[in-house]
Length: 179
Image 1: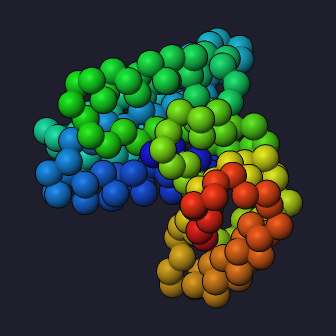
Image 2: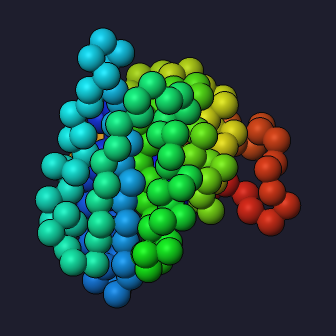
Image 3: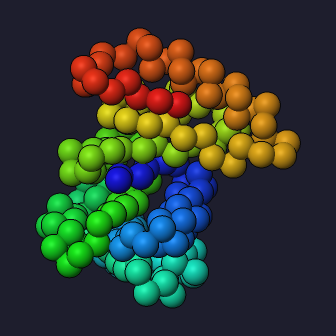
């Protein structure tokens, strides 16, 4: 599964919860978390793993943070090979968390069986902020943080994305993207 979304959408928190649910169901889960690299120093914080403390201690989970090192598209130059290595190592579920979302951070969509776009409910003008390219690639749009005071905003953005998805060209004859 490939996961992308804007900063603050809760990608790492979602992966932590979802990953724990999967390992409790006896799956072996690998997480490939891609972090941005500095254009100045080339360094990267690789901080996504620190937001997955429970999953990182789980013996049925493996978390590998990697820097983009200047690669565009939201993944690293070797993400596809890393997916194959994880599968070869016995991990039956591989989650790839992209560096974030923009107009072109969806290269992962061609590497995975399902591409999930994770969105917060109150990010301003959502349909303008998340460009058409990434919406067209999403197999599933999940509105995250949809509780408490954000329930109404989450329902509104869900309705907006359901309407927007109807206008897009279908990528598959058997699957209609869900929101």
